[in-house]
Length: 87
Image 1 (spheres, rainbow, N blue to C red):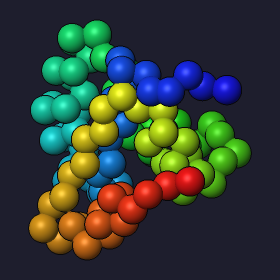
Image 2 (image 1 turned 180 degrees about the vertical axis):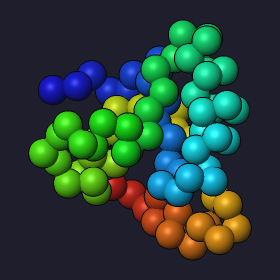
Image 3 (image 1 turned 180 degrees about the horizontal axis):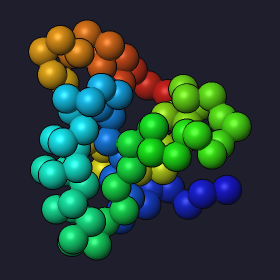
């Protein structure tokens, strides 16, 4: 069982599209990691796990001390579900 929350762990919810990768790497991941945080997004290690993407997102949200959400105009509607209570 993971101790919750891990305040040195930052989970990033962002679209899995190439045009957002530079923003994630340059402006989120590198600066935060340089300050000692562990930064991850859902597709970071998906290829090595036998875990459904939604299960992984749910688990990482519960683990994270900080959550960064990219609510780019064309992707804002699906992000509204983030604010629903999770059991």
